[in-house]
Amino acid sequence: MATSITHRITGVGLYLGIVFIAWWLVAASMGPEAYEPFLAAAAHPIGQIILFGFTWAATYHLLNGIRHLAWDLGFGFLPKTAMWSGIVVVALSILIAIGVFAWAYSVRMGGAIS
Amino acid sequence: MKSETPLHRIQGLGAAHSGTQHFWRERITSVALIPLTIWFGFAALALVGAREVDVLTFFQHPWNAGLMGLFIITVLIHSIVGMQSVIDDYVHQPGLKVLSLLLNRGFAWLMGAICLVALLRIVS
Figure (cartoon, one colour):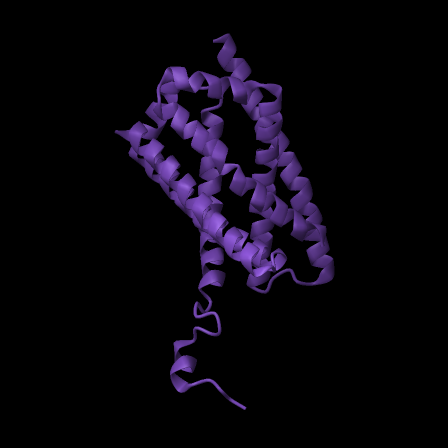
């Protein structure tokens, strides 16, 4: 099913995305001058699109991973249940990713004013 | 015809000599990553747009440094195992298979070293 190949694609994407976490930690460890370019890249529209992609991919992989663990324990295997839980995972992952971004933006706006 | 020796049978390691290790590593890291990923999500969200000093202050707290280290190590073990499943399924040419399996581990260890050294520099 489509949720299965998406699980793999998001997994591989998140794996490669560790490069950005490494960049973040290295930049932070090297002082304010090294951290500036990272902040600028993250705030850039392309950076924002990549970050949104990772947010959604992580949320999807987490939720669908829980679905896989439930299957391992023998729950939710009926075709009807599996179909239904797949739709829930896709919808919920999109909603949470948008919610996380909305939260981040509202906090940043609040921070900019104060 | 049974060609398995009694010793091989009780060892329970099967033809690949690793038994169910791959399966269990994938499951155990999956379960551990549920709370760790949620923690990382909140941590990252708290540090959106933060200055470098704020990031340092955050990771200098022992709980945050410890959880970040655990998160990185668990993510990388989970990724090695997951990526290996993908390689096992799609890469069949022997030379390419060995190369991709080596690259998989090499990338994970390199990223682990970089992240943990950076984290130690931040903490110290």
